[in-house]
Image (cartoon, rainbow, N blue to C red; front, side, top):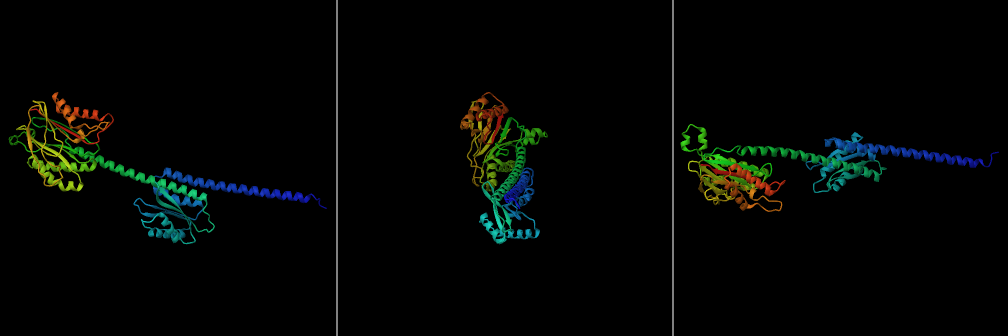
Length: 459
């Protein structure tokens, strides 16, 4: 006959077995969660590694739907985003069932086809749901770049028991954010390549422009010259030139070519295209070519400016830019400088005998302002020691750290003081540019192109 305490012992054993089963089940659950967590961490780590390592955006995007499906235990994931051209397209789709994947691709692309630029991407979500039907559960996540909606990462499930948990939502959002970073990095890289290409083009443009400026000072009978142009950007709108125009008739009969060049009449020009950078540089190049063509036609300075204005008017009007230009021609046989001005800064003329400064100016409008503009002309006789300074407004409009401008009066004082010392043209040039640097301040650059040309009579 069993003891009365045996049922109690049996009950204790049963409770102990139940506890063992519960503990085992809990351990198995913890182990499964740990494996899932490790799997999720591995998948997310692969995305992070790809983000750091891949230089090709397409390679990175190949991973996104696959990882998104794995971490959410869904059957399908699709990435829809705007391309670089601004067109919305299905970038990638992952589906284990190839036949189902092909059908889903067609349905999503059809939804994209019904999407218009006036719609928001919320409308796209509705179109995708409509096209996939009631049996597909669609969970969209935004891809945001600089607070702009640039696409969607869709999780799609045909399992009616599938639950869109908060953990799954956070994981997909993390993947979408990494996708946004990859897309933004790709755009930055493309912009960097574009800027590098543009920088190279600017370098080429600067090299060409530098080649168009005189490489050396011409040998002009009775005249010593010096000139320098410093551009604010790599390509500038300032221009100066020395142009051999009409050889003296006596020199033409001389077999000495060097003597013929020395005794030629020389055109001396300085100009400034409105604006800076590439547009101004292109117009400067155009001005140089057309002015040289006009100067070789044996016309007077005023006629040259008039013809140049007519020839350039249409191009300048279309570009909404103008050119200031001072053109002069020196005749070594008479030591006379004839000149005409198209609203450029009048050159400063220092007379050595009287130690006085005059402004060489005539009436004339900007080149490109009116097609039928006429220009006045004047001339001046150069005596030994007389010095002329051609300049652009980059010098007189230079500002110091306090915002004060150099102005023409200060330039006149500087020019007159260095001329009194009987300085040579190159010494005058160096002195004026050094004075400009001191005025602007150490470590600061001028905001505009700056050009100086110095002519000094030696005959």
